[in-house]
Image (cartoon, rainbow, N blue to C red; front, side, top):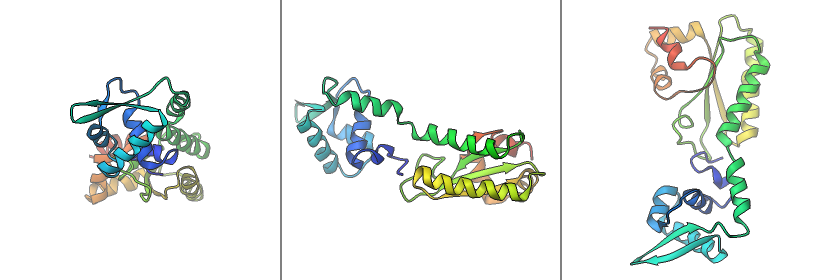
Length: 210
């Protein structure tokens, strides 16, 4: 799944990005503004997608000087379906919920467990070919076999849920402290980019090691 332009999983990629750029905009956008906001493909491709949507009536266009401005046509019979898709399509939120549920299912009584994204997914830059990198921090007494089972499930089920490869970096609190103390370069990435899904934030855990 392209997390930078997630609507591409439901619509043709450029067209989905164009619809997302126009969604809930009360004022019209020029073609260049749509292209800048959608950050998808070429300017020519954006104009072609807009032309298709105008031809189908879902987007209104008007000439303003040398430019054309575009806005969604909320009276179109297809608009309710688009609105419904936009309302329920929350892939990042849904993925967060599934990951939390899976960790809590395996470690229901371990309040010291933390799970966070890092890397391109945490920065909002993940594309179709990007891995989803997860940092899993567990208490020192977490059983090895249970940890291995959880890591395997996160990677396997995460791949099924998203289409992206999921890579899990599992560590215990003591090992996290050692990595921070040894100035491991990956610790700087966690400190800068990690986005917590469950438990204490990685930044808080790292501060506790200082």
